[in-house]
Image 1 (tube, one colour):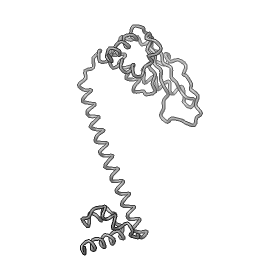
Image 2: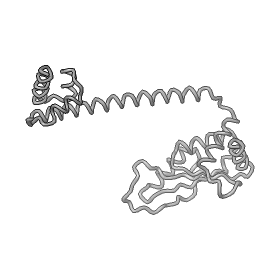
Image 3: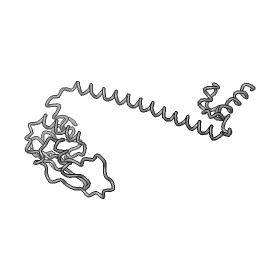
Image 4: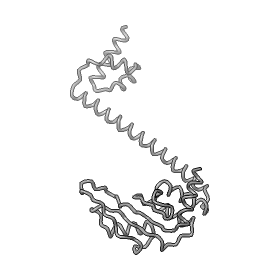
Amino acid sequence: MRLKSIEKQQAIMLRKQGYSLYEISIKLGISKGTASLWLKNTQLSDWAQKRIQKRRNEGSLKSQITLNERTHKRLTEAQDFARKTLENMPETMNNSRLYCALLYWCEGEKSKNDKSLFFTNSDPSLVRSFLKHLRKGYAVEELKFRVCVHLHNYHDPDKQLIFWSKVTTIPLVQFTKPYLKKNSGKNIRIGYAGCASVRYHDVRIARQVHAVARAFLE
């Protein structure tokens, strides 16, 4: 009992010096719960409270850094996994047809008809990937492409048309008049380049893209 009394007094002394419960439990070899029970009524000076708060902040920062490092490591591992996976997938015409069909089935407009392809998206990488595999998988005629860009009134139409022309590698002469969507100007999305609707009019190719997607899903 005397040993516990001595430990308790030491704990109170350390607490008044601004030591955290974790530090006290480590120094005295007691559980954090015991330290908390012993010290719950201990009065602390402003200096001690500031030291404890500082240690908490340092601990939180250290934990966040550790978490960020762990997350970064796992993301790097996932990226390496993705790179190795794609390296082992041959770039064949049939694969491009499948990728094109799946992208279209997920993001393309299927409800209108199966005589034309309508692929609308605001993500440049998705639009670029769809067109890449459409061109690699099928004998497309570049002059059949049409693009309509959906913009808000805070956009610079000329700038955004040039942007989407570079993304799609479709000349500006094949772009229709932009569709301007109403916007109050209060919710401006920084970095939002608008939405590109790419249209390709070819009954045979449109039906083939739909058919490949259905066949894969079945």
